[in-house]
Image: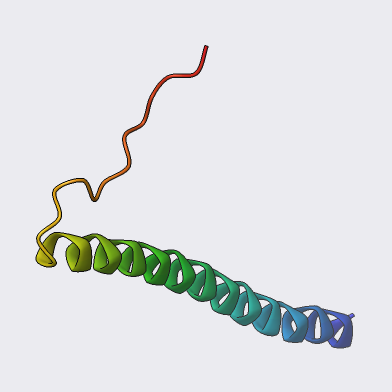
Length: 60
């Protein structure tokens, strides 16, 4: 029975590492999108325009 516990434990480590890598990828992707959109807004504002942010209107 000890060999079975070792085999089960050896699978848990790589799965946890994979989960952490996926989580870091998702957080990095969301951060990159946010920084990209903020950069576009800053570029628009620095070019002297005043209508850079799109207006959200409720749909009927």
